[in-house]
Length: 185
Image 1 (tube, rainbow, N blue to C red):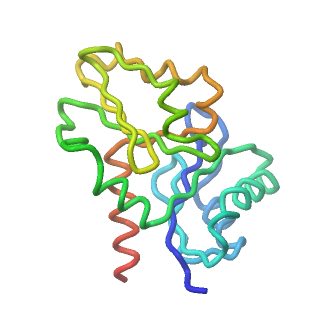
Image 2: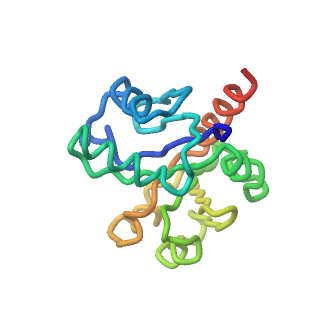
């Protein structure tokens, strides 16, 4: 079976001093699990890799390996190169195109959470926030000058939030460019 390229998005590591995992140790964990071309991006839990393992088992396998090695319960969302390409290229019109005006984020979802169910807890404030569901994710933009009035933080106390991981638009685009570069090499 040919290897497929993925990015694993680890939720809540190395943020605010919690769930500390050195990126070198995380890369080693992925290599020991049999994944290839392992590369990490910044300290907050993005690991790019190639694998011929069944896609359906990757999230659970990676979560189990993290728990076994580091003693941490870390939710993981695995996104294929093809899906990430769709998320970026088919984003709502203009999304992420005005970074000085809007803070733009992509909210990736872990099954069984669906975009429809996730949108039930996403609130927006008129004149501040905008939210869309498309391509299996949620897109969220908030006016930069009013970001402290944004409703995005209100999702944090919900049960659904445990099945979400948020990445900035710039990080999302960078991850795609890294997967594209690896595929071209």
